[in-house]
Image (cartoon, helix red, strand yellow):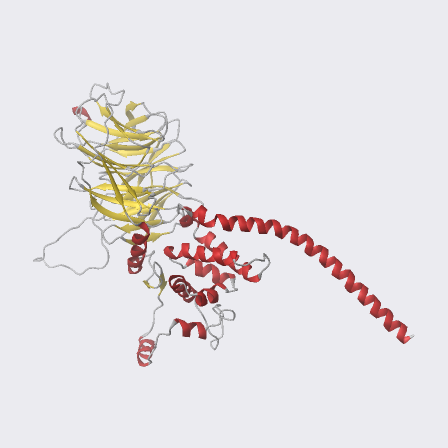
Length: 581
């Protein structure tokens, strides 16, 4: 069982799908929901909410696996065995605007939108394990129970004097944990407080039930983690009500960011716990919950990752999922825009494990294999650029026959550059049929090929494009692995122009502006961005200061030349007057 609910608003949501762990759902800095296939290591779906910039996603939670129909199917005979497969389908996303979006991975589209329940941002969402119910907690201090069959509010009540930061439903679906200033356990049938727990001085970001036993057996445990707290606290729900303090604590190196837990079904079964901290380290715990333990427990194994450079840099872990085997762990690491997923076997006999990986190589390989797998909403897509797709328009059978009759030979890059005049090409839809029409995809393809081959002629042809709309669309179609090489190329080209008013320098600035507008979130995730763009920043700053002085000089020169020209006109007029007189 994974602790999928309750994320701090400052943390970017990152959650594995339940049971099979086939998918990884992430919301990155650009506000888009991306679902990655952990088996093929490729991007499965991408969803852009209509208000992804104004109402950013604050938390996500997978719904229980269910049987879904993926499309029209033929009727099965009685002799055929009926195999029912449950899949992870619905995904709830809380937003800063107070709404909850329900996304269907099977349909590849928005299932429904839950509005009107909250007046503040949603901090946590949690599914009921059996009924089609969803619970959400918000900054408005309320908990809302949503009925997904009707899409309306079923119940709403005030949970605390402070914002509700985390929620968790018990495995039997009868109890609900909520966290504000204090941790409260609610009876979902009566919506009344069953127990209260105090012990955290900061906002609780994680709540998760650790056992599946009923509360009247003194065997029900849950754990909690808070912001800026390096301890995970375990609480026992006692029948006599004497459960004021935590019974067990797990020590961490930083506050918990992602938790995956395999619950205990009996006293003889240990609880397995995987905690990814804010500092990017993974801690593994295994403990038998049977009463209090005075000393905080240290992890049985701590794992971290680093790159393969001469001076190794740490690679942050984003999430971890425990496998059926005690030594197998599914990891997600890197950044939220392009995570790397890997299933590893950890030697738990060693207390500290450090894995080295070449993230750049993994990213490039992943982007190459992502092409044919992406499905965005319900559009029909085919492979185009690495990491991008182009829409396909339906063609009639007659046009297909005509295409078969004509032999089309693919042009080389040199022929393409010779045929195309980038400065005069028309990209408007209403361009005459006789004129050449160059799609923005061609610019992006040429730019990627020029960056990969480091061909100066191709890069000069593309970077000298004057139309700003072409530049914006080309940059928007670039795959992520080509963004940083483009920035370095633009950086070097700009620094090679000594004059601030150079027309080529102005064109290069347009490219840089488009890159910063479309790929800000990706560039912000790079650790060495400051060193790469520091020189460029100081150069632009100095040229802007110089530009102000040049503008003043330009004004003075304009006045001077105007006066000289006026004097010359006056002298010429005087000469003509003298000659005529």
